[in-house]
Image 1: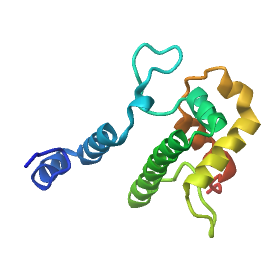
Image 2 (image 1 turned 45 degrees about the vertical axis):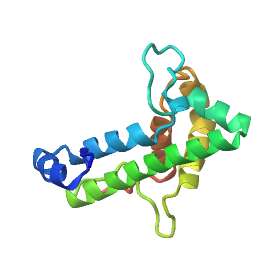
Image 3 (image 1 turned 180 degrees about the vertical axis):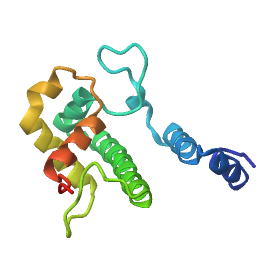
Length: 151
C-alpha cells in the first residue's frame, strides 16, 4: 500500500510538525490539477498551478465545458482555502479578511461574483499584470463586497 503525507501514520508526524495542511493540500493539488493548468503564465518561465487573470478570462470566453469545469474545481479549492481561513481565525480569535452577512453562503458562485465585482471596480489595475493569480483578485473582491465592521 502506498503511503503519502495524508495517510494515517504520516498524519500524526506531520500534525506534530505543524505541516499537515500544507502537505495534504500539496498532495491533493498534485493529483487533482489537470496538466492544462500547469502551463506557464504569460511572462513566467516556470509553470504555476492555478489560474492567472488572463487564463481565467480566456476560460470564461471560450465556454469550453471541460475548461469551465476545471475552473469550477479550482475555485472550489479557493473556497476551501477561504473556509480554512475562517476556521483558523475563529479558533485564534483573530479578525477575518472579510465577513459574510447572515444568510449569505460562501459558494463558488459568490467567489465568481466577487471576482467580477473587483474587476468592474479595479479592472484596469488588475489587467496591468495579466499573470496575477485570480485567487488574489477573489480575495480583494470578497473584502470589497463583504467588509468586516470596525471594532
